[in-house]
Amino acid sequence: MLTGTARYLPEFGLRIRGAFNPGSGDGAPDGVQTLLLIGYLGGEMWPIFQRQGKDEPNPLDGWTRRVIDPLAKELGAVALYPFEGPPWLPFQRWAMRAEGLTQSPVGPLIHPEYGLWHGYRAALGLRERIAAVPPALPKELCADCQAKLCLAACPAGVFDGGRYDLPLCRAYLKTADNACLDGGCLARRACPVGSQNAYGPEQARFHMQAFLAAFGN
Ligand code: B12
Image (cartoon, rainbow, N blue to C red; front, side):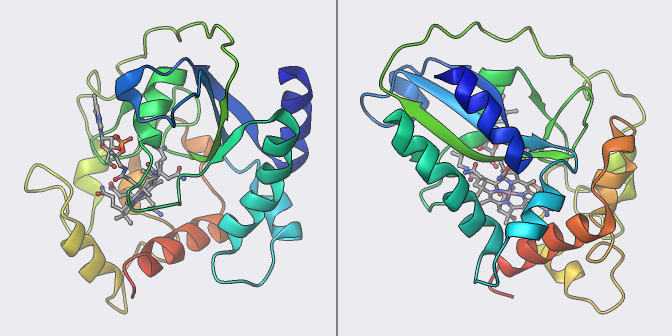
């Protein structure tokens, strides 16, 4: 079953990012014994989504459903999506269980090879218990990083108060000459980990536009 899934997903630039057996405090739907996290690394999903995505209100979410819903049906699994909410499903917490990643000071989880350039598109909730091997302890990439170039690189100083200042970020992105909307968040781009896997300009622009639209512009 999982071998078929692992073969199907790469056709769409997606992959199984990890799995774990959720307990009562993990926020998985009742009866789900195994959660498979599905996502992408770097730019692998982008060219396929560009070819297959439709002109619709949330094109990446619509495309994701068209890829994942049939797979979930075939497996008799529950399809769970990071973009369905609020309330939001705790995808980052799940990812930390499934893959052993840590949170960066700028928010997203940091991957040892892909840095801040990866994301999650879905999870499959299986009723069967497939014993998931716990991931290796995460590398403390950010705790061990002295330079913290990410925090210093934000042109709007959204991390200066010690935590991400969402209204400040939003206000800056709405200014005409902001440096992030077209090329991608400068704080993310400043991180040296996995920088060779950074999204290309079109993917970066797409995600930043979607991010801004999430505020209702
Ligand atoms: C709402 C939301 C936003 C909001 C608000 C985010 C905020 N910081 O408050 C807005 C629109 C601003 C936003 C922005 C971005 N987001 Co966002 N967002 C979400 C969404 C839909 C829900 C987050 C949430 O509230 N979850 C509910 C809580 C209960 O779940 P949680 O897993 O416990 O999440 C929290 C934990 O990680 C938490 N936490 C909980 N327990 C623990 C334990 C430890 C030890 C630690 C360290 C942290 C921690 O902090 C998280 C809060 O986000 C998620 C998708 C999802 N369903 O998770 C994406 C998601 C978190 N976002 C994502 C991304 C990439 C971004 C942006 C970089 C987008 C961009 N284009 O720039 C920015 C980064 C902003 C920032 N610096 O934080 C990715 C992160 C991927 C990754 N590599 O980790 C996600 C997972 C979406 C995805 N499909 O992959 N986002």
